[in-house]
Length: 299
Image 1: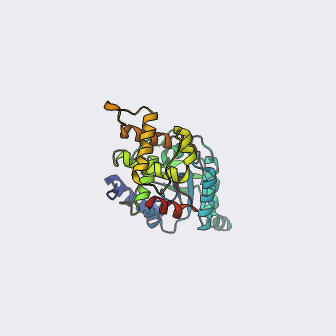
Image 2: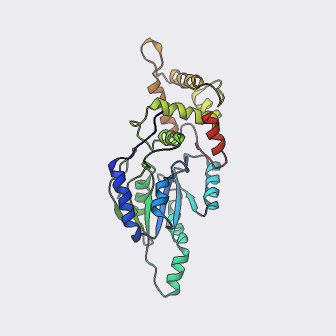
Image 3: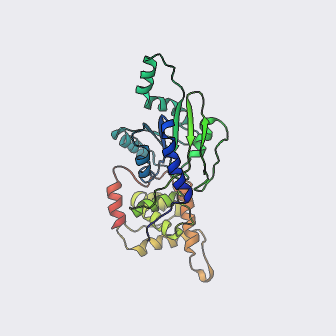
């Protein structure tokens, strides 16, 4: 596959705008997808934010494997970053964010209090890749519909300050992807969960890699959802994974003239099921399995 590159002009502007706003913020709230926390971390953000205090939110935790999410919380704690699993849609975990934000600035707030100063509301910058749920989170925190939302990347195009109660003020930013993915598996994982537009990559390629991820990590869930008798091993030849896609397509009626399988339709069935949680709570990477999964998928 060719190197995935997706860096529209509004993302270049967003990077510059974030750099210009840094002096106004106390804290960076980094919103990640709980199903792919490492792959949905933008390394460009580390460069932009430098030493700003950080709070990581693992969004869409309702779609992720809960045991793996706990591993990610421990992983981030190990590198000195507090991580909080949340679900922006239901609001699960969202109420804890203002208090966690203040906790991340505990030292600064204590210094202000020791000087007799009354700390103002925490000013936080919300950053994350496209379609990770930033606008939905802001609307939840603000208690009303303020930020534009959508089910595809690129909905948020500007910046705005938003009050979220008396203790928190938020600066929304457009989602930013880095210019290219050195690790192609990162690109496929993001495409599989819908963070890269389906118009950027061939859906058949994305579904093929999703099938490989699922066979490596969740074979039982894959078999149960599509009533598959058996699955190939993670080390099988590529045709074996295509065969799985075709079997799924046949069971879901993705047929075309001559009785052959329409792989594009079958691929969309697989991706919609994965994104919508129909396969169960799936995590495509974990701290303990990253090396194993990568070696398996590259094999």
